[in-house]
Image (cartoon, rainbow, N blue to C red; front, side, top):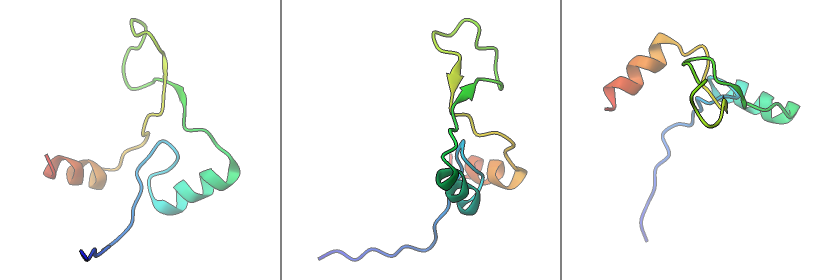
Length: 67
Protein backbone atom coordinates (compact mmCIF):
# COMPACT_ATOMS: atom_id res chain seq x y z
CA UNK A 1 0.00 0.00 0.00
CA UNK A 2 1.29 3.46 -0.88
CA UNK A 3 1.25 6.23 1.65
CA UNK A 4 0.12 9.75 0.89
CA UNK A 5 0.88 12.86 2.91
CA UNK A 6 -1.33 15.90 2.52
CA UNK A 7 0.64 18.92 3.66
CA UNK A 8 -1.96 21.59 3.02
CA UNK A 9 -5.05 22.56 1.12
CA UNK A 10 -5.71 25.61 -0.95
CA UNK A 11 -7.85 27.02 -3.69
CA UNK A 12 -7.36 29.79 -6.19
CA UNK A 13 -10.40 29.90 -8.43
CA UNK A 14 -13.05 32.11 -9.94
CA UNK A 15 -15.00 31.57 -6.72
CA UNK A 16 -12.31 32.82 -4.36
CA UNK A 17 -8.62 33.37 -3.76
CA UNK A 18 -8.40 31.08 -0.74
CA UNK A 19 -10.26 28.14 0.77
CA UNK A 20 -12.54 30.25 2.98
CA UNK A 21 -13.69 32.50 0.07
CA UNK A 22 -14.09 29.44 -2.15
CA UNK A 23 -16.18 27.57 0.46
CA UNK A 24 -18.36 30.63 1.15
CA UNK A 25 -19.04 31.07 -2.58
CA UNK A 26 -20.07 27.42 -2.88
CA UNK A 27 -22.39 27.68 0.15
CA UNK A 28 -24.00 30.83 -1.26
CA UNK A 29 -24.49 29.24 -4.69
CA UNK A 30 -22.38 31.81 -6.54
CA UNK A 31 -21.18 31.17 -10.06
CA UNK A 32 -17.65 32.04 -11.06
CA UNK A 33 -18.61 32.27 -14.72
CA UNK A 34 -19.01 35.68 -16.30
CA UNK A 35 -17.83 37.92 -19.12
CA UNK A 36 -14.11 37.69 -19.91
CA UNK A 37 -12.46 40.88 -18.67
CA UNK A 38 -8.72 40.18 -18.78
CA UNK A 39 -8.41 40.09 -22.59
CA UNK A 40 -10.34 41.24 -25.64
CA UNK A 41 -12.70 38.32 -26.18
CA UNK A 42 -14.61 39.83 -29.10
CA UNK A 43 -13.09 37.40 -31.61
CA UNK A 44 -13.52 34.34 -29.41
CA UNK A 45 -16.35 31.88 -29.90
CA UNK A 46 -17.36 32.29 -26.26
CA UNK A 47 -17.13 35.51 -24.28
CA UNK A 48 -17.76 33.98 -20.85
CA UNK A 49 -15.28 32.11 -18.67
CA UNK A 50 -14.38 31.36 -15.08
CA UNK A 51 -11.56 33.88 -14.64
CA UNK A 52 -9.48 34.22 -11.50
CA UNK A 53 -9.80 37.90 -10.66
CA UNK A 54 -7.70 40.05 -8.35
CA UNK A 55 -4.68 37.77 -8.31
CA UNK A 56 -2.30 38.67 -5.53
CA UNK A 57 1.43 39.11 -6.10
CA UNK A 58 2.07 36.20 -3.73
CA UNK A 59 -0.02 33.81 -5.81
CA UNK A 60 1.42 35.08 -9.09
CA UNK A 61 5.02 34.60 -7.95
CA UNK A 62 4.22 31.14 -6.55
CA UNK A 63 2.68 30.04 -9.84
CA UNK A 64 5.62 31.41 -11.83
CA UNK A 65 8.12 29.58 -9.64
CA UNK A 66 6.41 26.25 -10.46
CA UNK A 67 6.92 26.67 -14.21
